[in-house]
Length: 78
Image 1: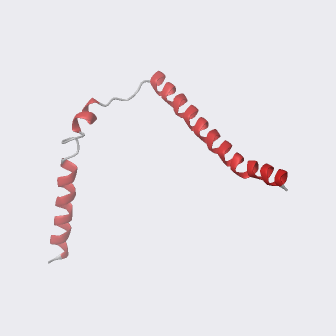
Image 2: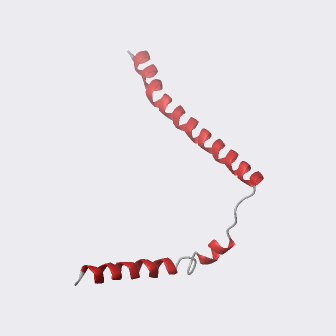
Image 3: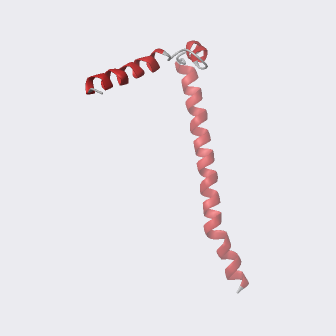
């Protein structure tokens, strides 16, 4: 097989896959999608930030308890 023929086959496969974008299972969803307005974007951003802070704070609290609480029980038990 010639290198040119191989590159044509690769190019054809890429073009075939690119032609299927927007069709099939997710095509209808992509067609219905729209860009959010500024107010909707700000609300979504605030909810995401609150969720990240809440989960991060909970993770830090669990880490702090894991590191510090067992020492109180061991010192008191001696």
